[in-house]
Length: 155
Image (cartoon, helix red, strand yellow):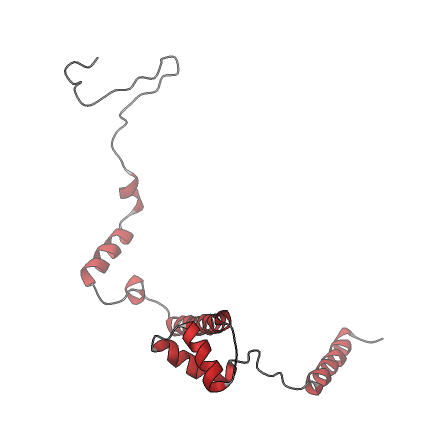
């Protein structure tokens, strides 16, 4: 009888063989070799139309304006994801947090102190409100009661 572990090992070996036999995949975009040039041109304020014409004239790469735009947008999104992942890794520390002050930045101390005081305030103090201002009786019709005096000439 063949165990599931033996079957899994055989499949892993088959997968390894397939993966090793495949050639490495080339770049997905013809703009890939020009990534740094395009990024620098964008930093210097060049438009996508101008970048496409520079690529055509100087590099011999003819692409549409939208191709350059999508290329830049995808790279920016990837860079943002990498930045957010690095920031998340920096924020998560192995040391246990001792409270809210460890999370909050140290700038604008007065504002953060007020926020901390509000968050630490007991819940019961927040839920207590004024006494009831009306009484509901289902046998009587509802009436609007105004705190202000009616204007002269009004009914």
